[in-house]
Length: 277
Image 1 (spheres, rainbow, N blue to C red):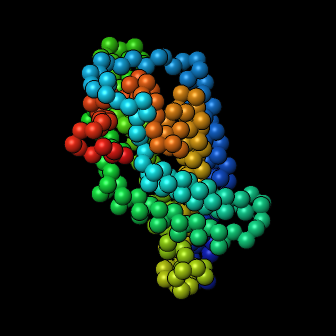
Image 2: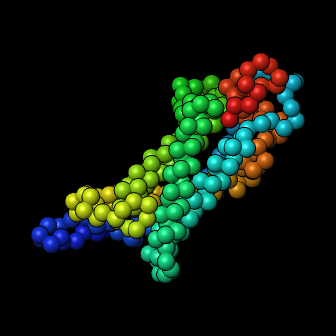
Image 3: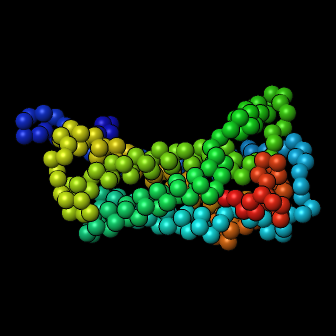
């Protein structure tokens, strides 16, 4: 199966024009397959998580542990709304749902781009920027979990930081796919009557074609990524985390059960920042 569709330009040169639209179904099936396999694995094969002791402050924690600020939550839901709008407007017409989608698509893209720019600035200066990136402890604990899963002797891993390695890996995948879609999408706006003056001759046909291919690959990748994200958001053991993205906090008991106070410190009146997302 050819994942790229080709055409012949006026000079007889074969150039790429976009991805093969069958990849929409490939991405959807891949996302669904992951959901099914993971659900079966958790139901029949997963073991109860064992953690090493994690001494840390607990007595002075509030009943509701703060996790996401109002600004962070607002960003998340604006990004989610724009992402769903982009996916629906991009791919529904390709599977036979006809409507005037171009304006909705580029407008949602502008909203997503602006929200991402805001988030990068907000995370860089007001939040703990490195909290979402893997560190040495994450990798060491992942290796320990793998050893213990296959029956090899290994010390138990530590409880999680604010964002477990799985969240950090997912964030990295979203960054790659999202920035690829945004970067190519900005230039593609020169092909339609949007914010910029229309200029289809900004790039050669080959360059335009490769840009459309990359944009499409990022888009179908986001189909699977969004499916996985929604799946984990509605899993029973993850509902406390999901609720924290709505209400901003989680139960103290859930925090103490899953998180390491030494890796994710909750400030309770001490001189340092009382709230870091």
